[in-house]
Amino acid sequence: MGARSSFKLEFLKKWALGLKICSSLAKDMSFLERKKAIKLSADVAMASARDGTTCWSRALIANASKQDDKKIIVRTMLGSEFKKITKSSSSGSFKPEKRVRSKKILRRSCAITRIRKTATKRVLACSIAKRLVKKRTQVLKGIVPGGESMDEVSLLEETLDYILSLQAQVDVMRGFANTQVLSNPK
Amino acid sequence: MNSALPEMLQCVQTSENIAGNGTDMTVLERQRGRLKWQQQQLQSQQLQQSYFNENQLNLFSLSQTQHYQDLMNNDSAFRELANQSMKVDPDLENGWPNFTKYPIPRTGFCGEMKGFVSSGLQTDALEMDYSISRTSSCPPAEAVAMAGDEKGIESVLTEKLASTVGRDSFKKRKADKAQNPKVIVAGDVKVKKIKGDAEEVESKITEQNNSSNNRETSADTSKENSKVTEVQKPDYIHVRARRGQATDSHSLAERVRREKISERMKYLQDLVPGCNKITGKAGMLEEIINYVQSLQRQVEFLSMKLATVNPRLEFNIENFFAKELFSACPDSFPSVGMPSEIVNPAYLQFNPAQQVVSCGLDMAVNSSDMGLRRTNSSPVPVPETFLDSSSFTQAQLSTIWETDLQNIYNVEFHQGRSSAFPSQAFTGSMEANNLKMEM
Image (tube, rainbow over all chains, first blue to last red):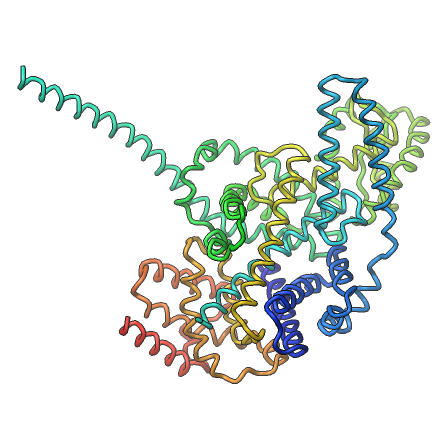
Protein backbone atom coordinates (compact mmCIF):
# COMPACT_ATOMS: atom_id res chain seq x y z
CA MET A 1 0.00 0.00 0.00
CA GLY A 2 2.76 2.39 0.87
CA ALA A 3 4.79 1.92 -2.25
CA ARG A 4 1.78 2.02 -4.48
CA SER A 5 0.33 5.17 -2.98
CA SER A 6 3.69 6.87 -3.06
CA PHE A 7 3.95 6.02 -6.73
CA LYS A 8 0.50 7.46 -7.29
CA LEU A 9 1.38 10.55 -5.34
CA GLU A 10 4.48 11.15 -7.36
CA PHE A 11 2.61 10.51 -10.56
CA LEU A 12 -0.03 13.00 -9.54
CA LYS A 13 2.48 15.68 -8.75
CA LYS A 14 4.32 15.29 -11.98
CA TRP A 15 1.14 15.14 -13.95
CA ALA A 16 -0.10 18.32 -12.35
CA LEU A 17 3.17 19.95 -13.26
CA GLY A 18 2.88 18.75 -16.81
CA LEU A 19 -0.67 20.01 -17.15
CA LYS A 20 0.34 23.39 -15.90
CA ILE A 21 3.13 23.55 -18.38
CA CYS A 22 0.81 22.55 -21.20
CA SER A 23 -1.77 25.11 -20.31
CA SER A 24 0.81 27.82 -20.03
CA LEU A 25 2.34 26.96 -23.36
CA ALA A 26 -0.74 27.20 -25.51
CA LYS A 27 -4.01 28.86 -24.65
CA ASP A 28 -7.21 27.89 -26.43
CA MET A 29 -6.29 24.49 -27.63
CA SER A 30 -8.70 22.39 -29.57
CA PHE A 31 -10.24 19.32 -28.07
CA LEU A 32 -7.81 16.95 -29.69
CA GLU A 33 -4.85 19.01 -28.69
CA ARG A 34 -6.02 19.09 -25.13
CA LYS A 35 -6.51 15.38 -25.09
CA LYS A 36 -3.06 14.80 -26.48
CA ALA A 37 -1.53 17.15 -23.99
CA ILE A 38 -3.26 15.43 -21.11
CA LYS A 39 -2.25 12.01 -22.30
CA LEU A 40 1.29 13.05 -22.95
CA SER A 41 1.77 14.60 -19.56
CA ALA A 42 0.20 11.58 -17.93
CA ASP A 43 2.49 9.18 -19.76
CA VAL A 44 5.60 11.17 -19.09
CA ALA A 45 4.62 11.56 -15.46
CA MET A 46 4.15 7.84 -15.14
CA ALA A 47 7.47 7.16 -16.76
CA SER A 48 9.36 9.67 -14.70
CA ALA A 49 7.79 8.42 -11.51
CA ARG A 50 9.83 5.32 -12.20
CA ASP A 51 12.96 7.45 -12.28
CA GLY A 52 14.57 5.75 -15.20
CA THR A 53 15.02 2.44 -13.47
CA THR A 54 13.06 0.52 -16.04
CA CYS A 55 13.63 0.17 -19.73
CA TRP A 56 10.09 0.99 -20.75
CA SER A 57 10.10 4.28 -18.89
CA ARG A 58 13.23 5.39 -20.62
CA ALA A 59 11.90 4.32 -23.96
CA LEU A 60 8.63 6.11 -23.36
CA ILE A 61 10.39 9.34 -22.59
CA ALA A 62 12.71 8.91 -25.53
CA ASN A 63 9.78 8.35 -27.86
CA ALA A 64 7.94 11.31 -26.48
CA SER A 65 10.88 13.59 -26.99
CA LYS A 66 11.36 12.66 -30.60
CA GLN A 67 8.70 15.02 -31.82
CA ASP A 68 9.61 18.64 -31.48
CA ASP A 69 6.37 19.94 -30.14
CA LYS A 70 6.30 17.34 -27.44
CA LYS A 71 9.96 17.66 -26.69
CA ILE A 72 9.60 21.03 -25.03
CA ILE A 73 6.95 19.80 -22.69
CA VAL A 74 8.90 16.73 -21.79
CA ARG A 75 12.02 18.70 -21.16
CA THR A 76 10.40 21.21 -18.91
CA MET A 77 8.62 18.51 -17.03
CA LEU A 78 11.63 16.47 -16.33
CA GLY A 79 14.16 19.21 -15.95
CA SER A 80 17.46 17.81 -14.88
CA GLU A 81 16.39 14.22 -15.06
CA PHE A 82 15.87 14.46 -18.79
CA LYS A 83 19.51 14.23 -19.68
CA LYS A 84 20.16 11.45 -17.26
CA ILE A 85 17.30 9.40 -18.59
CA THR A 86 18.02 9.90 -22.24
CA LYS A 87 21.66 9.10 -21.77
CA SER A 88 21.05 5.79 -20.16
CA SER A 89 18.71 4.62 -22.87
CA SER A 90 20.51 2.61 -25.46
CA SER A 91 20.08 3.56 -29.05
CA GLY A 92 21.75 0.81 -31.00
CA SER A 93 18.81 -1.46 -31.03
CA PHE A 94 17.09 -0.97 -34.34
CA LYS A 95 18.80 -3.78 -36.13
CA PRO A 96 17.01 -6.67 -34.45
CA GLU A 97 13.77 -5.61 -36.11
CA LYS A 98 15.05 -6.06 -39.58
CA ARG A 99 16.86 -9.20 -38.69
CA VAL A 100 13.69 -10.62 -37.26
CA ARG A 101 11.68 -9.79 -40.30
CA SER A 102 13.99 -11.49 -42.74
CA LYS A 103 14.32 -14.46 -40.43
CA LYS A 104 10.58 -14.75 -40.30
CA ILE A 105 10.25 -15.04 -44.01
CA LEU A 106 13.00 -17.61 -44.17
CA ARG A 107 11.53 -19.60 -41.36
CA ARG A 108 8.09 -19.59 -42.79
CA SER A 109 9.26 -20.94 -46.07
CA CYS A 110 11.35 -23.60 -44.36
CA ALA A 111 8.65 -24.49 -41.91
CA ILE A 112 6.07 -25.06 -44.56
CA THR A 113 8.23 -27.53 -46.40
CA ARG A 114 9.21 -29.14 -43.12
CA ILE A 115 5.65 -29.52 -41.95
CA ARG A 116 4.53 -31.22 -45.07
CA LYS A 117 7.11 -33.85 -44.54
CA THR A 118 6.66 -34.56 -40.85
CA ALA A 119 2.91 -34.48 -40.58
CA THR A 120 2.46 -36.04 -37.15
CA LYS A 121 -0.13 -34.26 -35.12
CA ARG A 122 2.07 -33.64 -32.18
CA VAL A 123 4.76 -31.97 -34.21
CA LEU A 124 2.16 -29.85 -35.92
CA ALA A 125 0.67 -28.78 -32.65
CA CYS A 126 4.05 -27.92 -31.23
CA SER A 127 5.05 -25.89 -34.22
CA ILE A 128 1.73 -24.07 -34.24
CA ALA A 129 2.09 -23.30 -30.58
CA LYS A 130 5.58 -22.02 -31.10
CA ARG A 131 4.48 -19.83 -33.92
CA LEU A 132 1.64 -18.45 -31.85
CA VAL A 133 3.96 -17.65 -29.01
CA LYS A 134 6.36 -15.93 -31.33
CA LYS A 135 3.63 -13.90 -32.95
CA ARG A 136 2.31 -12.82 -29.64
CA THR A 137 5.67 -11.88 -28.23
CA GLN A 138 6.12 -9.72 -31.27
CA VAL A 139 2.81 -8.04 -30.61
CA LEU A 140 3.72 -7.54 -26.98
CA LYS A 141 7.00 -6.02 -28.01
CA GLY A 142 5.08 -3.56 -30.08
CA ILE A 143 2.80 -2.62 -27.23
CA VAL A 144 5.25 -2.19 -24.41
CA PRO A 145 7.32 0.91 -25.02
CA GLY A 146 10.85 0.03 -25.87
CA GLY A 147 10.00 -3.60 -26.16
CA GLU A 148 11.77 -4.15 -29.45
CA SER A 149 15.16 -4.24 -27.91
CA MET A 150 14.50 -6.76 -25.19
CA ASP A 151 14.90 -10.45 -24.90
CA GLU A 152 11.99 -12.54 -23.68
CA VAL A 153 12.93 -12.64 -20.05
CA SER A 154 13.36 -8.95 -19.65
CA LEU A 155 10.32 -8.35 -21.81
CA LEU A 156 8.18 -10.16 -19.31
CA GLU A 157 9.70 -8.26 -16.43
CA GLU A 158 9.13 -4.96 -18.14
CA THR A 159 5.58 -5.94 -18.96
CA LEU A 160 4.98 -6.70 -15.32
CA ASP A 161 6.23 -3.34 -14.20
CA TYR A 162 4.44 -1.58 -17.02
CA ILE A 163 1.14 -3.18 -16.12
CA LEU A 164 1.50 -2.12 -12.52
CA SER A 165 2.25 1.45 -13.48
CA LEU A 166 -0.59 1.52 -15.95
CA GLN A 167 -3.00 0.33 -13.32
CA ALA A 168 -1.88 3.04 -10.94
CA GLN A 169 -2.11 5.62 -13.69
CA VAL A 170 -5.61 4.56 -14.61
CA ASP A 171 -6.71 4.67 -10.99
CA VAL A 172 -5.40 8.15 -10.45
CA MET A 173 -6.76 9.46 -13.70
CA ARG A 174 -10.16 8.00 -13.16
CA GLY A 175 -10.46 9.37 -9.68
CA PHE A 176 -9.30 12.72 -10.86
CA ALA A 177 -11.73 12.72 -13.73
CA ASN A 178 -14.54 11.95 -11.33
CA THR A 179 -13.67 14.83 -9.11
CA GLN A 180 -13.41 17.12 -12.08
CA VAL A 181 -16.77 16.08 -13.39
CA LEU A 182 -18.39 16.69 -10.08
CA SER A 183 -16.75 20.00 -9.44
CA ASN A 184 -17.65 21.37 -12.87
CA PRO A 185 -21.20 20.32 -13.51
CA LYS A 186 -22.07 21.56 -16.99
CA MET B 1 -65.44 -36.49 -9.98
CA ASN B 2 -65.56 -32.79 -10.35
CA SER B 3 -64.65 -32.18 -6.80
CA ALA B 4 -61.86 -34.70 -6.94
CA LEU B 5 -60.17 -32.96 -9.84
CA PRO B 6 -59.53 -29.65 -8.15
CA GLU B 7 -58.31 -31.49 -5.11
CA MET B 8 -55.93 -33.42 -7.21
CA LEU B 9 -54.81 -30.27 -8.89
CA GLN B 10 -54.21 -28.67 -5.54
CA CYS B 11 -52.19 -31.60 -4.39
CA VAL B 12 -50.12 -31.49 -7.52
CA GLN B 13 -49.56 -27.80 -7.14
CA THR B 14 -48.55 -28.03 -3.55
CA SER B 15 -46.22 -30.87 -4.30
CA GLU B 16 -44.73 -28.82 -7.09
CA ASN B 17 -44.38 -25.91 -4.76
CA ILE B 18 -42.68 -28.03 -2.20
CA ALA B 19 -40.40 -29.44 -4.78
CA GLY B 20 -39.77 -26.00 -6.17
CA ASN B 21 -39.14 -24.66 -2.72
CA GLY B 22 -36.89 -27.54 -2.04
CA THR B 23 -34.77 -26.80 -5.05
CA ASP B 24 -34.90 -23.13 -4.30
CA MET B 25 -33.73 -23.76 -0.84
CA THR B 26 -30.77 -25.74 -1.96
CA VAL B 27 -29.90 -23.17 -4.55
CA LEU B 28 -30.38 -20.42 -2.02
CA GLU B 29 -28.33 -22.19 0.52
CA ARG B 30 -25.61 -22.70 -1.97
CA GLN B 31 -25.74 -19.09 -2.97
CA ARG B 32 -25.67 -17.97 0.60
CA GLY B 33 -22.75 -20.14 1.34
CA ARG B 34 -20.99 -18.79 -1.64
CA LEU B 35 -21.82 -15.22 -0.71
CA LYS B 36 -20.48 -15.64 2.74
CA TRP B 37 -17.34 -17.23 1.48
CA GLN B 38 -16.95 -14.52 -1.11
CA GLN B 39 -17.48 -11.79 1.39
CA GLN B 40 -14.98 -13.25 3.72
CA GLN B 41 -12.58 -13.63 0.92
CA LEU B 42 -13.19 -10.12 -0.30
CA GLN B 43 -12.76 -8.60 3.08
CA SER B 44 -9.51 -10.30 3.59
CA GLN B 45 -8.67 -9.74 0.00
CA GLN B 46 -8.58 -6.00 0.04
CA LEU B 47 -5.83 -6.09 2.54
CA GLN B 48 -4.21 -8.91 0.71
CA GLN B 49 -4.56 -7.26 -2.61
CA SER B 50 -3.25 -3.97 -1.49
CA TYR B 51 -0.43 -5.69 0.28
CA PHE B 52 0.16 -7.89 -2.67
CA ASN B 53 0.18 -4.98 -5.02
CA GLU B 54 2.48 -3.14 -2.76
CA ASN B 55 4.69 -6.12 -2.68
CA GLN B 56 4.66 -6.29 -6.42
CA LEU B 57 5.63 -2.66 -6.66
CA ASN B 58 8.22 -3.26 -4.06
CA LEU B 59 9.70 -5.81 -6.34
CA PHE B 60 10.65 -3.06 -8.67
CA SER B 61 11.22 -0.13 -6.48
CA LEU B 62 13.63 -1.89 -4.17
CA SER B 63 17.14 -2.60 -5.22
CA GLN B 64 17.76 -5.32 -7.71
CA THR B 65 19.01 -7.83 -5.19
CA GLN B 66 15.96 -7.56 -3.07
CA HIS B 67 13.94 -7.68 -6.21
CA TYR B 68 15.30 -11.04 -7.08
CA GLN B 69 15.03 -12.22 -3.53
CA ASP B 70 11.37 -11.33 -3.34
CA LEU B 71 10.76 -12.98 -6.66
CA MET B 72 12.24 -16.13 -5.37
CA ASN B 73 10.33 -15.86 -2.14
CA ASN B 74 7.05 -15.41 -3.79
CA ASP B 75 7.47 -18.02 -6.39
CA SER B 76 7.50 -21.24 -4.43
CA ALA B 77 5.05 -19.88 -1.91
CA PHE B 78 2.72 -18.96 -4.76
CA ARG B 79 2.65 -22.48 -6.00
CA GLU B 80 1.91 -23.98 -2.63
CA LEU B 81 -0.78 -21.51 -1.85
CA ALA B 82 -2.30 -21.72 -5.29
CA ASN B 83 -2.67 -25.43 -4.73
CA GLN B 84 -4.20 -24.88 -1.35
CA SER B 85 -6.60 -22.26 -2.54
CA MET B 86 -7.78 -24.40 -5.39
CA LYS B 87 -8.78 -27.06 -2.94
CA VAL B 88 -10.50 -24.59 -0.71
CA ASP B 89 -12.71 -23.15 -3.35
CA PRO B 90 -13.84 -25.61 -5.94
CA ASP B 91 -17.19 -23.96 -6.02
CA LEU B 92 -16.01 -20.64 -7.24
CA GLU B 93 -15.76 -21.64 -10.81
CA ASN B 94 -19.45 -22.39 -10.81
CA GLY B 95 -20.24 -19.08 -9.34
CA TRP B 96 -20.00 -16.99 -12.46
CA PRO B 97 -23.72 -16.27 -12.81
CA ASN B 98 -23.70 -14.69 -9.39
CA PHE B 99 -20.84 -12.36 -9.89
CA THR B 100 -22.91 -9.34 -10.63
CA LYS B 101 -24.11 -9.37 -7.06
CA TYR B 102 -20.69 -9.23 -5.58
CA PRO B 103 -19.02 -5.98 -4.79
CA ILE B 104 -15.96 -5.25 -6.75
CA PRO B 105 -13.05 -4.10 -4.72
CA ARG B 106 -10.51 -1.56 -5.60
CA THR B 107 -11.38 -0.90 -9.17
CA GLY B 108 -14.88 0.22 -9.74
CA PHE B 109 -14.14 0.50 -13.29
CA CYS B 110 -16.89 -1.45 -14.86
CA GLY B 111 -19.37 0.97 -13.45
CA GLU B 112 -17.24 3.89 -14.47
CA MET B 113 -16.35 2.77 -17.92
CA LYS B 114 -19.91 2.11 -18.93
CA GLY B 115 -20.64 5.73 -18.49
CA PHE B 116 -17.88 6.85 -20.74
CA VAL B 117 -17.47 4.31 -23.44
CA SER B 118 -18.41 6.01 -26.63
CA SER B 119 -17.06 3.93 -29.47
CA GLY B 120 -18.29 0.38 -29.50
CA LEU B 121 -16.14 -1.54 -27.14
CA GLN B 122 -16.13 -4.99 -25.86
CA THR B 123 -13.85 -3.84 -23.15
CA ASP B 124 -16.87 -3.32 -20.97
CA ALA B 125 -17.45 -6.98 -20.62
CA LEU B 126 -13.77 -7.62 -20.58
CA GLU B 127 -13.30 -5.21 -17.76
CA MET B 128 -16.14 -6.64 -15.79
CA ASP B 129 -14.49 -9.96 -16.11
CA TYR B 130 -11.12 -8.54 -15.34
CA SER B 131 -12.16 -6.74 -12.23
CA ILE B 132 -14.22 -9.56 -10.89
CA SER B 133 -12.03 -12.42 -11.70
CA ARG B 134 -9.29 -10.42 -10.14
CA THR B 135 -10.94 -10.86 -6.85
CA SER B 136 -10.96 -14.54 -7.25
CA SER B 137 -7.39 -14.78 -8.26
CA CYS B 138 -5.79 -12.92 -5.43
CA PRO B 139 -6.17 -14.94 -2.26
CA PRO B 140 -2.92 -16.80 -2.46
CA ALA B 141 -1.01 -13.60 -2.62
CA GLU B 142 -1.49 -12.56 0.94
CA ALA B 143 0.40 -15.24 2.71
CA VAL B 144 3.08 -14.87 0.11
CA ALA B 145 3.48 -11.25 0.90
CA MET B 146 3.57 -12.06 4.57
CA ALA B 147 6.11 -14.72 4.00
CA GLY B 148 8.29 -12.41 2.01
CA ASP B 149 10.23 -11.15 4.95
CA GLU B 150 13.74 -9.93 4.79
CA LYS B 151 15.98 -12.84 5.27
CA GLY B 152 19.61 -13.04 4.50
CA ILE B 153 19.93 -12.88 0.79
CA GLU B 154 22.21 -15.85 0.49
CA SER B 155 20.18 -18.15 2.62
CA VAL B 156 16.99 -17.25 0.87
CA LEU B 157 18.43 -17.63 -2.53
CA THR B 158 20.00 -20.95 -1.80
CA GLU B 159 16.83 -22.17 -0.23
CA LYS B 160 14.49 -21.02 -2.91
CA LEU B 161 16.53 -21.72 -5.95
CA ALA B 162 17.31 -25.10 -4.61
CA SER B 163 13.66 -25.79 -4.06
CA THR B 164 12.43 -24.46 -7.34
CA VAL B 165 15.13 -25.19 -9.81
CA GLY B 166 16.67 -28.22 -8.32
CA ARG B 167 13.86 -30.21 -6.84
CA ASP B 168 14.76 -33.20 -8.82
CA SER B 169 18.35 -32.57 -8.13
CA PHE B 170 17.92 -33.73 -4.57
CA LYS B 171 17.36 -37.16 -5.95
CA LYS B 172 20.48 -36.78 -7.93
CA ARG B 173 22.55 -35.80 -4.99
CA LYS B 174 21.46 -38.88 -3.18
CA ALA B 175 22.13 -40.92 -6.27
CA ASP B 176 25.58 -39.44 -6.07
CA LYS B 177 26.32 -38.69 -9.63
CA ALA B 178 29.35 -36.57 -9.56
CA GLN B 179 29.54 -36.02 -13.26
CA ASN B 180 27.04 -33.20 -13.30
CA PRO B 181 27.45 -29.69 -12.04
CA LYS B 182 25.65 -28.83 -8.86
CA VAL B 183 22.98 -26.36 -7.96
CA ILE B 184 24.68 -23.60 -6.15
CA VAL B 185 23.58 -20.06 -5.77
CA ALA B 186 26.07 -17.40 -5.02
CA GLY B 187 25.13 -14.58 -2.73
CA ASP B 188 24.35 -11.13 -4.01
CA VAL B 189 22.99 -12.32 -7.28
CA LYS B 190 21.68 -9.40 -9.22
CA VAL B 191 19.05 -9.64 -11.88
CA LYS B 192 21.17 -8.03 -14.54
CA LYS B 193 23.97 -10.37 -13.77
CA ILE B 194 21.66 -13.28 -14.05
CA LYS B 195 20.65 -12.18 -17.48
CA GLY B 196 24.26 -12.12 -18.44
CA ASP B 197 24.58 -15.44 -16.71
CA ALA B 198 22.66 -17.21 -19.37
CA GLU B 199 25.55 -16.63 -21.68
CA GLU B 200 28.16 -17.21 -19.05
CA VAL B 201 26.54 -20.36 -17.80
CA GLU B 202 27.56 -22.21 -20.91
CA SER B 203 31.20 -21.46 -20.51
CA LYS B 204 31.15 -22.03 -16.78
CA ILE B 205 29.33 -25.27 -17.07
CA THR B 206 31.83 -26.61 -19.54
CA GLU B 207 34.48 -25.70 -17.02
CA GLN B 208 32.56 -27.44 -14.34
CA ASN B 209 32.11 -30.49 -16.47
CA ASN B 210 35.81 -30.76 -16.97
CA SER B 211 36.57 -30.23 -13.35
CA SER B 212 33.85 -32.52 -12.12
CA ASN B 213 35.06 -35.32 -14.31
CA ASN B 214 38.20 -35.25 -12.30
CA ARG B 215 36.55 -35.58 -8.95
CA GLU B 216 34.33 -38.60 -9.05
CA THR B 217 34.02 -39.37 -5.40
CA SER B 218 31.90 -37.86 -2.62
CA ALA B 219 29.80 -35.30 -4.39
CA ASP B 220 28.71 -33.85 -1.07
CA THR B 221 32.05 -32.76 0.24
CA SER B 222 33.13 -31.42 -3.09
CA LYS B 223 29.82 -29.63 -3.34
CA GLU B 224 30.51 -27.94 -0.05
CA ASN B 225 33.94 -26.96 -1.16
CA SER B 226 32.72 -25.56 -4.42
CA LYS B 227 29.99 -23.76 -2.55
CA VAL B 228 32.58 -21.99 -0.54
CA THR B 229 34.60 -21.10 -3.58
CA GLU B 230 31.61 -20.09 -5.64
CA VAL B 231 30.31 -17.72 -3.05
CA GLN B 232 33.29 -15.59 -3.76
CA LYS B 233 32.51 -15.46 -7.47
CA PRO B 234 28.89 -14.40 -7.71
CA ASP B 235 28.76 -14.24 -11.46
CA TYR B 236 27.06 -17.42 -12.45
CA ILE B 237 24.53 -19.99 -11.43
CA HIS B 238 25.37 -23.61 -11.50
CA VAL B 239 22.65 -25.80 -12.78
CA ARG B 240 22.32 -29.47 -12.31
CA ALA B 241 20.94 -31.56 -15.08
CA ARG B 242 17.92 -33.52 -14.04
CA ARG B 243 17.65 -37.23 -14.27
CA GLY B 244 17.05 -38.47 -17.76
CA GLN B 245 17.74 -35.16 -19.42
CA ALA B 246 20.51 -33.96 -21.63
CA THR B 247 23.56 -32.65 -19.92
CA ASP B 248 24.55 -30.31 -22.70
CA SER B 249 25.67 -26.95 -21.67
CA HIS B 250 23.30 -25.61 -24.26
CA SER B 251 20.28 -27.43 -22.97
CA LEU B 252 21.11 -26.55 -19.41
CA ALA B 253 21.27 -22.90 -20.28
CA GLU B 254 18.04 -23.32 -22.18
CA ARG B 255 16.42 -24.81 -19.16
CA VAL B 256 17.56 -21.99 -16.93
CA ARG B 257 16.13 -19.52 -19.38
CA ARG B 258 12.88 -21.41 -19.65
CA GLU B 259 12.49 -21.54 -15.93
CA LYS B 260 13.06 -17.85 -15.61
CA ILE B 261 10.43 -17.24 -18.21
CA SER B 262 7.92 -19.49 -16.54
CA GLU B 263 8.57 -17.76 -13.24
CA ARG B 264 7.78 -14.40 -14.74
CA MET B 265 4.72 -15.81 -16.41
CA LYS B 266 3.47 -16.90 -13.06
CA TYR B 267 3.74 -13.41 -11.69
CA LEU B 268 1.94 -12.09 -14.69
CA GLN B 269 -0.72 -14.68 -14.19
CA ASP B 270 -1.37 -13.34 -10.75
CA LEU B 271 -1.40 -9.79 -11.95
CA VAL B 272 -3.62 -10.08 -14.96
CA PRO B 273 -7.16 -10.90 -13.89
CA GLY B 274 -8.80 -14.00 -15.18
CA CYS B 275 -5.72 -15.97 -15.96
CA ASN B 276 -5.94 -18.68 -13.39
CA LYS B 277 -7.14 -21.32 -15.73
CA ILE B 278 -4.95 -20.49 -18.63
CA THR B 279 -1.94 -22.71 -18.85
CA GLY B 280 0.58 -22.24 -21.56
CA LYS B 281 2.52 -19.36 -22.85
CA ALA B 282 0.40 -18.58 -25.88
CA GLY B 283 -2.83 -18.10 -23.97
CA MET B 284 -1.16 -16.16 -21.24
CA LEU B 285 0.52 -13.86 -23.72
CA GLU B 286 -2.82 -13.28 -25.39
CA GLU B 287 -4.37 -12.29 -22.09
CA ILE B 288 -1.49 -10.06 -21.21
CA ILE B 289 -1.70 -8.32 -24.55
CA ASN B 290 -5.42 -7.79 -24.16
CA TYR B 291 -5.02 -6.44 -20.68
CA VAL B 292 -2.28 -4.01 -21.58
CA GLN B 293 -4.24 -2.82 -24.57
CA SER B 294 -7.32 -2.31 -22.47
CA LEU B 295 -5.37 -0.34 -19.90
CA GLN B 296 -3.90 1.85 -22.60
CA ARG B 297 -7.33 2.42 -24.07
CA GLN B 298 -8.62 3.39 -20.67
CA VAL B 299 -5.92 5.99 -20.39
CA GLU B 300 -6.99 7.38 -23.75
CA PHE B 301 -10.60 7.56 -22.73
CA LEU B 302 -9.84 9.18 -19.45
CA SER B 303 -7.70 11.80 -21.09
CA MET B 304 -10.50 12.44 -23.57
CA LYS B 305 -12.92 12.77 -20.73
CA LEU B 306 -10.71 15.21 -18.94
CA ALA B 307 -10.33 17.19 -22.13
CA THR B 308 -14.11 17.49 -22.45
CA VAL B 309 -14.60 18.51 -18.87
CA ASN B 310 -12.05 21.29 -18.88
CA PRO B 311 -12.20 23.70 -21.78
CA ARG B 312 -8.89 25.22 -20.93
CA LEU B 313 -6.84 22.64 -19.07
CA GLU B 314 -7.34 24.44 -15.83
CA PHE B 315 -7.18 22.09 -12.96
CA ASN B 316 -7.42 23.19 -9.42
CA ILE B 317 -4.68 21.98 -7.25
CA GLU B 318 -6.80 21.69 -4.16
CA ASN B 319 -8.64 19.00 -6.02
CA PHE B 320 -5.46 17.06 -6.06
CA PHE B 321 -5.28 16.75 -2.32
CA ALA B 322 -8.68 15.29 -1.99
CA LYS B 323 -7.96 13.26 -5.08
CA GLU B 324 -5.05 11.86 -3.24
CA LEU B 325 -7.31 10.65 -0.52
CA PHE B 326 -9.31 8.79 -3.07
CA SER B 327 -6.33 7.23 -4.64
CA ALA B 328 -5.17 6.02 -1.29
CA CYS B 329 -8.52 4.97 0.07
CA PRO B 330 -10.42 3.21 -2.67
CA ASP B 331 -8.00 0.36 -2.69
CA SER B 332 -9.69 -1.02 0.32
CA PHE B 333 -13.32 -0.24 -0.27
CA PRO B 334 -15.73 -3.02 -1.00
CA SER B 335 -18.83 -1.42 -2.37
CA VAL B 336 -19.65 -1.03 -6.02
CA GLY B 337 -21.11 2.42 -5.94
CA MET B 338 -18.17 3.55 -3.94
CA PRO B 339 -16.56 6.12 -6.21
CA SER B 340 -19.61 8.28 -6.50
CA GLU B 341 -20.31 8.09 -2.83
CA ILE B 342 -16.87 8.98 -1.72
CA VAL B 343 -16.69 11.75 -4.21
CA ASN B 344 -19.88 13.32 -2.95
CA PRO B 345 -18.49 14.42 0.37
CA ALA B 346 -15.34 15.64 -1.27
CA TYR B 347 -17.35 17.68 -3.71
CA LEU B 348 -18.55 19.82 -0.91
CA GLN B 349 -15.01 20.40 0.01
CA PHE B 350 -14.23 21.59 -3.48
CA ASN B 351 -16.71 24.38 -3.45
CA PRO B 352 -15.02 26.20 -0.65
CA ALA B 353 -11.65 25.10 -1.94
CA GLN B 354 -12.17 26.63 -5.32
CA GLN B 355 -12.82 29.93 -3.74
CA VAL B 356 -9.43 29.81 -2.17
CA VAL B 357 -6.78 31.33 -4.33
CA SER B 358 -4.73 28.57 -5.82
CA CYS B 359 -1.30 28.67 -4.40
CA GLY B 360 1.83 28.23 -6.41
CA LEU B 361 2.44 24.70 -7.45
CA ASP B 362 5.62 24.25 -5.49
CA MET B 363 3.97 25.33 -2.32
CA ALA B 364 1.05 23.10 -3.04
CA VAL B 365 3.25 20.13 -3.65
CA ASN B 366 5.27 20.69 -0.55
CA SER B 367 2.30 21.24 1.59
CA SER B 368 0.58 18.07 0.49
CA ASP B 369 0.84 16.67 3.98
CA MET B 370 -0.68 19.79 5.41
CA GLY B 371 -3.43 19.60 2.90
CA LEU B 372 -4.10 16.05 3.80
CA ARG B 373 -4.53 16.83 7.42
CA ARG B 374 -6.78 19.70 6.63
CA THR B 375 -8.95 17.64 4.39
CA ASN B 376 -9.21 14.94 6.98
CA SER B 377 -11.34 17.14 9.12
CA SER B 378 -13.82 18.33 6.58
CA PRO B 379 -15.15 15.12 5.11
CA VAL B 380 -16.12 13.79 8.48
CA PRO B 381 -19.14 15.97 9.20
CA VAL B 382 -20.11 15.99 5.56
CA PRO B 383 -21.14 12.38 4.98
CA GLU B 384 -23.66 12.68 7.72
CA THR B 385 -25.52 15.31 5.79
CA PHE B 386 -26.13 13.10 2.82
CA LEU B 387 -28.88 11.02 4.24
CA ASP B 388 -31.04 10.87 1.18
CA SER B 389 -29.57 8.09 -0.81
CA SER B 390 -28.05 4.97 0.62
CA SER B 391 -27.73 6.21 4.12
CA PHE B 392 -26.69 2.85 5.33
CA THR B 393 -23.78 2.62 3.00
CA GLN B 394 -22.79 6.17 3.75
CA ALA B 395 -22.53 5.46 7.41
CA GLN B 396 -20.62 2.33 6.66
CA LEU B 397 -18.36 4.20 4.31
CA SER B 398 -17.68 6.99 6.71
CA THR B 399 -16.70 4.59 9.44
CA ILE B 400 -14.55 2.63 7.08
CA TRP B 401 -13.08 5.81 5.74
CA GLU B 402 -12.30 7.08 9.16
CA THR B 403 -10.52 3.99 10.23
CA ASP B 404 -8.70 3.74 6.97
CA LEU B 405 -7.55 7.31 7.02
CA GLN B 406 -6.51 6.92 10.57
CA ASN B 407 -4.42 4.00 9.66
CA ILE B 408 -2.87 5.77 6.77
CA TYR B 409 -2.26 9.19 8.10
CA ASN B 410 -2.35 8.65 11.86
CA VAL B 411 -4.42 11.69 12.45
CA GLU B 412 -7.15 11.64 14.98
CA PHE B 413 -10.35 12.93 13.58
CA HIS B 414 -11.43 14.61 16.70
CA GLN B 415 -8.21 16.51 16.83
CA GLY B 416 -8.40 17.22 13.16
CA ARG B 417 -11.67 19.00 13.46
CA SER B 418 -10.09 21.95 15.11
CA SER B 419 -7.61 22.58 12.35
CA ALA B 420 -7.45 25.44 9.92
CA PHE B 421 -10.31 24.55 7.64
CA PRO B 422 -13.36 24.46 9.82
CA SER B 423 -15.18 27.54 8.66
CA GLN B 424 -15.02 26.65 5.02
CA ALA B 425 -15.92 23.08 5.67
CA PHE B 426 -18.94 24.10 7.62
CA THR B 427 -20.06 26.51 4.98
CA GLY B 428 -19.75 23.62 2.60
CA SER B 429 -21.95 21.47 4.71
CA MET B 430 -24.41 24.28 5.11
CA GLU B 431 -24.67 24.51 1.39
CA ALA B 432 -25.25 20.82 1.24
CA ASN B 433 -28.02 21.12 3.75
CA ASN B 434 -29.64 23.83 1.74
CA LEU B 435 -29.38 21.75 -1.37
CA LYS B 436 -30.97 18.90 0.43
CA MET B 437 -33.83 21.00 1.57
CA GLU B 438 -34.49 22.20 -1.89
CA MET B 439 -34.42 18.69 -3.24
